[in-house]
Image: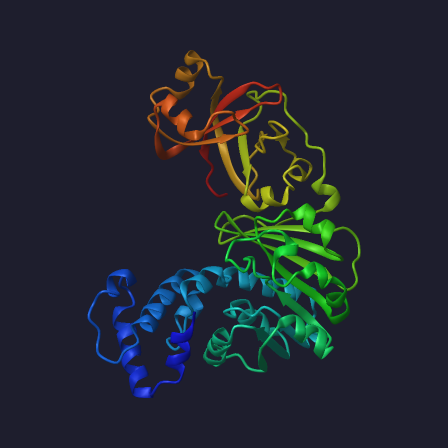
Length: 415
């Protein structure tokens, strides 16, 4: 609940300043420890702790917001569920690419939430409407949007679907981030179980918007979603520093050609990887067994794997795959623009004791991973008697002929 936030917005200025000073003084402290400290009389401790914890989370997730001293933060769950600054900026880039400036008339965010995505999308449109059912989140938006310098915006406290169907407006962009929890608070993944159910809105969305941008769970089955949703022109799989965070589906009133898959790893050196539906289903060039001719090993990033576009890497980067299910690739020259990690192959071995001893030598520490391999990392690490970490990387995997090998590599330096 956000009742503490509602109360503070209506308190006297003097009391608010006292709490502001307390928050500033203690904002780097642990909130659990702070909860048991004595505080001045008349102060709302719940609100203060909420603001301190929110600011601490924002420093990593929303650094621009954390620099604004008057920003108010919601409870932890809302902070955890909201988009980061980095993914919000990426959504803005999508909107700027798809909609020329003269077509950026009006947008609506039907599921406003804490308003992070809205705050980055709204400035590029002549007018933007934020819609949210939770009255406390709406009050936060009323307070925070002016602090962020947002103008030409409207805040509607109500049902986003009603806004879409009852106002009969046409929008340049409709944005939705359906809630992925049921009434009991349990996480849901299926499109039909999200709120609102966008599968039932398909026709209305096509009628009311030129572009619809939908944020969905990274756990969602992309192929199933494409089968369910209409007029999807682009799928964006968005990772941040190697961790898959969001799926974005672009729905357009006029769909031309195949669906394009955009795989991005924000805050990394990885290039954006784009391929078509046809390229996604490319038959990979598979290597039967590793040889001395292959000197570099490649591991696609999380977005590539989630989008299931890894097979397209073979033709586009002239790579060979070790096994249809291993998702490790090799070649004989270093690629400077590969969307993932690359390693110089130092050696490899089967799992006979003699071969392992020869390949590993006196190695005592390594980063160990298994890819399409029957043994877990923990069991294999115990068998190899290796500590975790160091500059060496070991990949236990299966070759196309069914044999198991251990590949030793060193991470390549940026070119």
